[in-house]
Image (cartoon, rainbow, N blue to C red):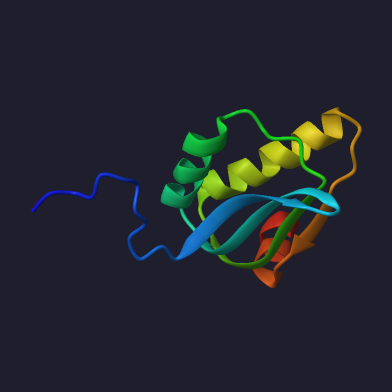
Length: 99
């Protein structure tokens, strides 16, 4: 059995995407965001935080260490650039960031 010739997701439970919206670029995290979801995002966009106008993590149900690092990197980069970033939080993310 051979692997498909493309990077096909297999039973992905979480995702990280960058969306261009009318309000600007939004980093979206959803579901069980594991290291594989973060790795897929980094392969597509690179390791440097992308300038974003918002972060939507309102439907995050699980957050791996690499996912939390990605989120914090984007928030820190926006802060250093003097750009406030709207952050939509799931209850889980609110708990993680508070602790």
